[in-house]
Amino acid sequence: MTRDPAYDLIIVGGGMVGASLAIALAGRGLRMALIEAYPPGVDGQPSYDDRAIALAYGSSRIFDAMGVWPAMRGSAEPIHDIHVSDRGHFGFTRLAAEDEGVPALGYVITARELGRVLLEQLPQVGSLDVIAPARLLGFVDAGDRVSVEVERDGLVSTLESRLLVAADGGNSTIRERLDVPVQRWQYGQSAVVTNITPAQAHRNVAYERFTDSGPVALLPMSEGRCAVVWTVLDAQVDEVLGLDDGQFLAAFQQRFGYRLGRFEKVGKRAAYPLSLLRARESVRGRVVVIGNAAHTLHPIAGQGFNLGIRDVAALAEVIDAASAAGSDIGAPAVLATYEAWRQAEQRNVALATDGLARLFTNPLSLVRMGRNLGLLAMELLPAAKHPLARAAMGLMGRQPRLARGVPFE
Ligand SMILES: Cc1cc2nc3c(=O)[nH]c(=O)nc-3n(C[C@H](O)[C@H](O)[C@H](O)COP(=O)(O)OP(=O)(O)OC[C@H]3O[C@@H](n4cnc5c(N)ncnc54)[C@H](O)[C@@H]3O)c2cc1C
Image (spheres, rainbow, N blue to C red):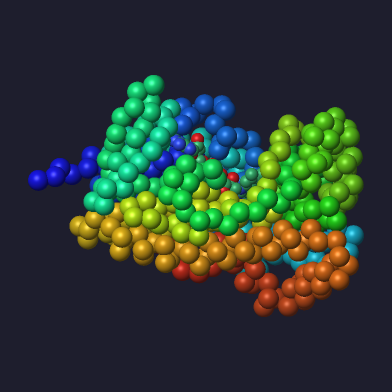
């Protein structure tokens, strides 16, 4: 007789997506392990750095149903309006929370703050072993279980589980070991991120501006600051990071314009190379690939984590239903349900984000004319705006119960 694996579920990666999955499944009677390369709360953890994350309204509802939103809400600045324009041209459109009957289209929170709340919650999750700092070295899918090889403090051990979840980020070791085919594209661009303080109040408006040299976003933050995401060519990154504060403010002002008055202060700057990656499969045997491991997107539309947290909500629902029915949560039929549910949305959001990044970086005048007409048509036809607003809020397609604000019972 074979013995049962020690765990029902092993999650590799304690970034925003992996940590969220462990919390979403708290109290559901599952024996879980979370393996993370960095010690909890350490400063150098790249998933929880100072970049601002625009959380869609739908994502805030998921966190609310998971019970963590009250702890995040105080550090999250609401987005009441989104203003999309093509700088120096006639096209623009505006989305408003009021028109959609929601308190906010989304919220802006730093990855650090989001991480702080998630990491504080992890010890409250019963029957979860947080194994960190530790690294997954390899794994074997033995048909009825997965054996996972982990290194911790120089010691290698083997853990067994019904299901292995790869939430190990864009360079996922697990996805690579599975040899899952991926669609990959380097944009030759990087996002320079920082925060600035404009002379005028941001009034909780998020600006998405398309300029001849790439898109820029300005997101409302606390204390009158705005988060900046400025897309520059890779070849210009060193030059932009090397600017002193005054030079940076002047250069960004020229790119964005004076809609918020003069930019007065700027914070620390960091650059992230931009690429697209989409795994063509998210399930193999007893392994599921989620979050950035399954799809890494251009941050132009702020969709990366929002897509990842919807993966979490859907996977948690499928696992919980299987577990409640007494089924094996890693069985192919269970995981096929998850994959079928998420595949179309993952593909559509990746394609739409990629299309947007290319369309709005194309300097050809005919393309520019077309996109300006598109924006203007959107502005003049409220019926066309509503689906865009629903997509921006993460409320399209079949909503998992957590996204509908319904906790597991
Ligand atoms: C500039 C920028 C701005 C962005 N803005 C937004 C936004 O506004 N809205 C939005 O929704 N998204 C945004 N994103 C995307 C968002 O940051 C990502 O989608 C999100 O961080 C992905 O989380 P993750 O947990 O899947 O991956 P990660 O954050 O990469 O976490 C992976 C984790 O796995 C661990 N790990 C990796 N390998 C191993 C191993 N072998 N063993 C153990 N542990 C391992 C790592 O240490 C890490 O903690 C932005 C991204 C960038 C770069």
